Each structure stands twice: as structure tokens, then as C-alpha cells.
Length: 290
Image (cartoon, rainbow, N blue to C red):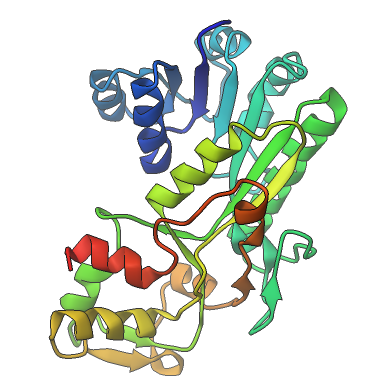
């Protein structure tokens, strides 16, 4: 196992960007996706990919896990926790301490804390389905880690945005039918480049298990971000509606149910990581090219 090899459960946007960086460094990257179309795209980029099925074990995955040096899990959990644990716990447990193991989670595990700051030592008290599912999954991975002496890195990510996935067009093209919700619910975000950067930094820090909040320095409301974009582009403020008057989707109800301010000191102190985009302002300016 001289050549480093990543096996990634769920090669989405973040894992794909990470994979490209590793391929450039001479790594071998294997992983899973859900559709044949995605599989073809990833294989054209140099990755070795197999379709993941949520209801059965795939022999190819079992074989590839055995000679992997790094395993990253980014598949969203369901009400029973992590699908990977359900089918591949034994295989991963057998790797003992030979492998780097990482799990991408979410700050939704913390629950509602209002204007109070939380850090990695704050007890998780999730109040949303997503947060509860994430915490179940985290605890499953912690159990595997502790029982089998495998160091585990948990990345509690804020809301991820990038040059391709962000709210800017929504701010620019709001309408009476689709207004921007005017609210004071602050939340932390993280640019995709920074989440990838933190994971790469954590590859070098595997002497113990860790939990890292991967968020920016400045929690901000959606309305605050909309105002910033409109000011930078010198365009009128978007159509908007007060939160208490808005008709919310189920997903929006979950989002606006909780608020907390998340600290990120540990990625700086323990990993020595310097954020490329300390707040949404730097991130949006880079996306807008200003």
C-alpha cells in the first residue's frame, strides 16, 4: 500500500473537488455514486466508481476498502443512521488502525441555541430531522472508531456554497411569487473550497480522533447576505417578505426552526488552517468577480 488511495462513499460536489486534487497528487481515488450518468461523468475524470445501492452490499466495494489508505463518508443518513455502517461496518472494522477515516456531518446536530455560540464541546441537542439523523450517524461512527482503535475525523459543516451553487441568482431574480424571506436567523456557511481544504489538512492529523466545526467566521442571515449582494451589484433590493408572513416549505420550516452561532477555532489551532473565505462577503465577491 505504498500508493495512497481514497475510497469515498458518495462522490458529490465536495468529494469530487477533493478527488481531483488528490488525483493531481498521484493518488488513486475510488468511490460510489447513485446514477449511471454520474458514474460515467466521474469515470471520464479519472475516478473509479461503482453505483451505490441503499439496500444491498456490493462486492466491489468490499474488495476496494481492504487496500484503501483513506476512507471518507459523505452519504446523507436516514432515520436509522448511516447506510455505510449498515452494510460495511465489518469491513471497515477489520481495517483496524491502518486507515484514515473521515465523516462529513453537519452543524445541525447542535440544535437551537439562539444568539449563543457553540463549539465542538457543546452537547448536541438536535431538533430537526436532519440533525437527529446526523447525530445517529455520528454516534455509529464513533462506536466503530472506539471498538476498533480507528481514529475518526468528524467534519461538522455549515451550509456549503460554491461558485456553482449559491444564492446569488436567487437574490438577483426574486419576484412577488418567489420573494426573499426577510429574517434575523443567522447561520454559518462554508465555501466548498474551504471544506475541501480542511479535509486535506486533516489527512495530516490522524494521531487521534477529532470533531471539527467547518464554518466561516461570520454567521449572517439570508437577508443580510441579499442586501450585501444587491449593494455590491448596485441593484435594487429583492422582493421580500417577513418570516412570520411567509408560506414555508417543509425544508424551509426545518431551516428556520433553529439558530446558533458556531465557533471554528479548532480548525485554525489544531490544523493550522487559514480560511480562504472568512465570511460570505469574501466568498460572494470572488464568485461575482469583484
